[in-house]
Image 1 (cartoon, one colour):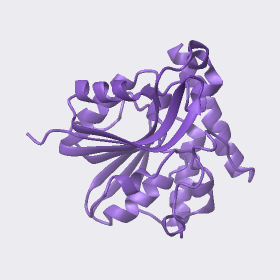
Image 2 (cartoon, helix red, strand yellow):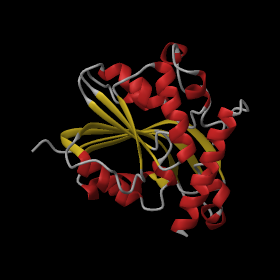
Image 3 (cartoon, helix red, strand yellow):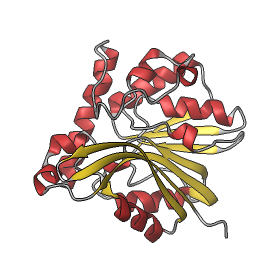
Image 4 (cartoon, one colour):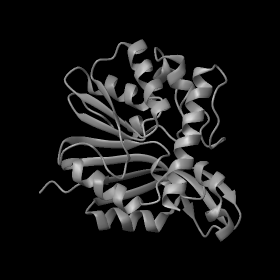
Length: 243
């Protein structure tokens, strides 16, 4: 099933990128993805970067980025959060975007070119296997992507590995409170739509702690009723110990 989910995600998000390039907009996770960014955030960004946003929050606001920091966006899509991060960390900092979908990477690099941003690098790869050295990143962000992985424990361990001591994990993600029926968990379209693969909130906290993180916090931002449980957009924060 892992390979099936990965390939379905790759295909659907590739199609979403192509829809944006073709001028047809995008669709995923609606209404979870709507009205996430203030107009002041998106001012000056390429239109395609905004249209390709398929997230469930604004992790660049959550992360409280500082001048000179190195930021990594897991599942960077069309690049909106990478470009916003690049603004915040300035010329002395750097923003990486990691994505496994060729169409999204092409779209993101075109958006970078249009925005004339130089402190950005988009990498091809899977979030379960981050192509960066140990302790090389100050902050990890992500926007409605970790829930799509079939091995979330591996994702969080990789995030811990590449963070510097004292580094911050600050992501927006879809989280479940309560139990989703098995039929929903098995539904591939709902998985790609950010619902079926979402972690239960206590499990998210446990996996972060198991990976080594401390100061774990989860803050719901939007709540939706579904079946016998609740699906939430949430800010998830944690920190790698400084010692």
